[in-house]
Structures are given as C-alpha cells and as structure tokens.
Image (cartoon, rainbow, N blue to C red):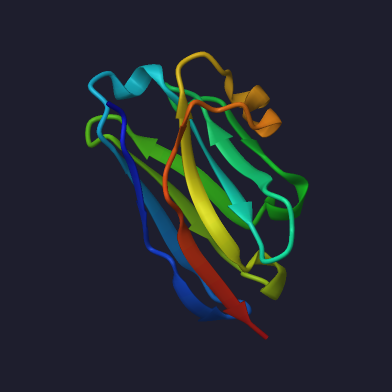
Length: 125
C-alpha cells in the first residue's frame, strides 16, 4: 500500500518562497519516478515537475523552469519541491505523484498510479 503525504503548503506573498515535501510509504522508493502536479481553482490539473528514481533526470513545465527545483532523498523516502519567486498564478493545490512504470519525461502525461491528497499553496499579489 503506497501512501503519499504532502506538506509545506501555505500562504505567501508574490516573490516569496515555499518548500513542499512529499513523504512516501514505499519500501523501494528509489524504483519510483516521482513528480508534482497542481490544480488551480476552476482550472484543469497541470504537470509541474518530475524526477527519476535516481534523481539524475528532472523535468519541468515551462512556466516554473528557473524558479522551482525538484529533488529527492532516497534514504529518507522523501521528495521536495523548492519554489522561489512565486507568482499569484502559482496558486493551486499541489499533488505528489509516484509510479514505477513511468519515466520522468512522461510524467507530464498524467498517467501516474499513486497520488497524494494535496497541499494548498496561495500566493497573493
């Protein structure tokens, strides 16, 4: 039974930073490609970032490149998303995802097996 629990969401002003974390109850964590999606109010869910099991390969959506950094600690079964220079359009519920059968570049397609319940990020102008 895989469980993903996000934390670190909150309210911040534009230009600020937040660090999201995802704790995974997975025995073989390094086998899982991990990623983040987000869904803003009234909008469709969108891909944010992904990272391979080894952490070597990362992928980002264009709107967050240079501002967000995805990372993982396989020894602690955790994944993080460092979000800098936040903008109001980054406001959304952020979801942690995991799958053993999807490579990092393909996470953006959204067919991930495991999803967390989400953490809310609110960026005010």
